[in-house]
Length: 308
Image: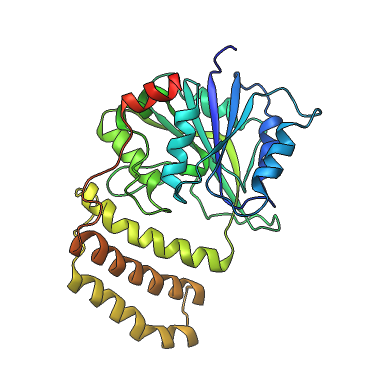
């Protein structure tokens, strides 16, 4: 079996209702280099594995090599993304999400930006679960910060050499949030270039309101650990600072619910959730010292996977 140029890695957990749309979009890529599809099931409790198995064995689907990989041991996105990389064979690793939909030219455009070792992100277009476009949610560029830019995991690719050199995704991070920021920053800190591919379009499905609240909390918690990993990017989180921000937002919330000003009420609620997440992060990562060191892959992990 010849080696593919690209491994497209799709991580999923309980995505039985949405994953076929993405898999069919990947089957319909135009002008793409030779690629394989690796679906990583991160411990689904619904019929995801059966849905993917049905797609794999559908005689009508194009002959794109594809496999289903289990990562059921730990419900954790960085862990699942690493398991996909270990199962891959391509020179380039391209990541997308199970509930989104790739444009037909997505893979051709994204991989075209990686003619040297490094990392790249594409354009992310947001829409609701019903398919209604939501312009302005994502920038038409890499996400800028006052430290370094980063790509979003819903539309990200990097060379295998870059991935191995930086140790892949940090499995000490929370199960959701900031793993794309961290891997983008670590790549740049180690001298790898990062690029933006405007022609690589991914149609991104926004989370439901309840899921968005959970994600906001985890992202805010992860921000504290990221501030420890990348001290040049954030001011240190302190107990006094976290409590001051939380108290101020809680005190202002009743008024903001009545008079939200230029922001939606949901935005003010998100700020409160964010403050709670920062406090939880301080407790976990600063006070308790959990995950004091990154948990990264090593070259020997890839060597072992290649001979398994």
